[in-house]
Each structure stands twice: as C-alpha cells, then as structure tokens.
Length: 317
Ligand SMILES: Nc1nc2c(ncn2[C@@H]2O[C@H](COP(=O)(O)OP(=O)(O)O)[C@@H](O)[C@H]2O)c(=O)[nH]1
Ligand SMILES: [Mg+2]
Image (cartoon, rainbow, N blue to C red):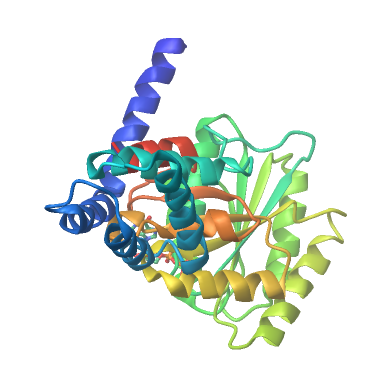
C-alpha cells in the first residue's frame, strides 16, 4: 500500500510538473531577466517582481501581500542576495497559502454521511465543466463509489451528448432528457435515480449561458429548490469551474457566480495551456472558497486534487 501510494504521488507530481511547465518557464525567464547583473534584491528588483507576479495573474491584491512580505525580509536581513530570491518567494507564497487550511487534501474524497452526496457543477460555457465532471467521476468510480451523472445543461444537444460520451467512457449511468427541457426537472430525475440506485455520488452538469446575473440566480435557485424536494439538504457542494487560462476573467467569473449562488468549492482548469498558472495562487488567497481541483490536461487522468504544498513545490522546483 505504501509503495503504491508513492508510485501514485510521483505520477501525480509528474503530471503536475508538466501541467505547470509553461507557467514556470514564463515566470522564471522573466525573473532571471529582472535579476540579471544584480546581486542584491533592491527596489528595482522588487518593482520588476511585482510586475511579473501581476502579469502571471496572481492578482494585484495577492501580489501586494507577497511584495510586502519580501520587503519586510529585506528590511530585516539588510542584504538579500538575488540568488536567494527563488527560495524566499517560495517560502513567502507557501506561507501566504498556509494562512488558510484549504488546499490540504491529497486525494479524491467525498465527505461521508451524505448518501447520495450531491455535487452541482456551475460555470460559464467552455470552462471545462463537463470534462471536469467526467474526470472526477472516473476518479471516484476508481475509489469504489457509485456515481450517477445528470445532464442538466439542456441548452445544446451537443452538451448532453458530450456528458453521455464521458458516462460511456467511465461506464456509469447518466440521466438526461431532450435538449431544451427544464434543467431543474433533469436534476430532480437524477437525484431520484441516485436515491433509487443507492448511489454514493450524484453530479449535476449545468449550463453557463445565462446572460445576466438575475437569470443566473433564478435558474440556479430553481434547480436547487427542485433538488431539495428529493434530498432536503442538496446540493452538498456547488463546484464553480474556472478556466485558468483566462486570467482576470476567471476572477471576474468567480465574483459573479459567488454573488448569484452559494459556491462552496472551485476547480481551475487548463493550467497546462497557460503561462499564467499564478491565477491559482491569487484565487486561493482572495476567495474564501477552497480550490479543490485543478485541470492539467484533456485526458481522463488530468484532474488533480489541489494541494497547495505540491503546487508550490512543483512551481519552484
Ligand atoms: N488543455 C486542457 N483542456 C481542457 C481542460 N479541461 C477542459 N478542457 C477542454 O476545454 C474544452 C471545453 O470543455 P467542456 O468540458 O466542454 O466545457 P463546459 O462548456 O464548461 O462543459 C474542451 O475542449 C475540453 O477538452 C484542461 O484541464 N486542460
Ligand atoms: Mg458542458
């Protein structure tokens, strides 16, 4: 068991390293330019560092916090060599993320005591909701859990088909209706089926094409209310999916969705395709909502539980 665990985590680390490669290369090439010819961390280096962090989509607020921490160290230590900057950045970012106890999980787990555990997945079109659901269902099934999917994104036939493809790939049941049907009704059917099948986990896919906040709020509230006719405290988790390659847009979407409904966890996708992986650091710092999962590729295995220590480790390796 111990050996298996080691093999698993080294594989996980490899995928994470690969997924963060673009972000890392981008960050460290800028950083080495900023410190070229300088032996000491001075105001110029700090200014450049600030710009690098902001352009890596760490976000202004979180960047300011990091810079302040490094300034304090410079003030205390008097002389801070640029060759130590890496290590210091790593320590300060890890320290910042450690202030909350989110991002501590190391494995896919569903809290016990709720059966079925109902997970509603929200987010705008194209961020990776359906893909994340497929990958997550695969992980949970591999852990021996019975998973049922609900295709409550009824706007496009393709959206339903896509979830069906994932259900087939993972070999789990899916509840769906025709395109254009009421999402709340699909969610209702899915929960009922989940209860009847004694499922462990029910995952509901939703549409993100609601053109304003009021519509979005009404739609999500309705889906929740209808679910609660079957399971009084459903959904147990509302997972907002954000596309990590969209940078500040992801922050904006997080703001809008958290205003429209109670979001309880986040997934940040497409970190493999971006040089701006810093968005995960900013989002974990700024929203009081835990980043639970990160997407590091399109494959079925390319979803990871977000662990801040592993993340920082991979980034500053
Ligand atoms: N590279 C990469 N692509 C992803 C990831 N997650 C999703 N995608 C791709 O993003 C596109 C949109 O995903 P989809 O699940 O349909 O988004 P939805 O509209 O929110 O359901 C698809 O082409 C996915 O393969 C990821 O972590 N990395
Ligand atoms: Mg979809």
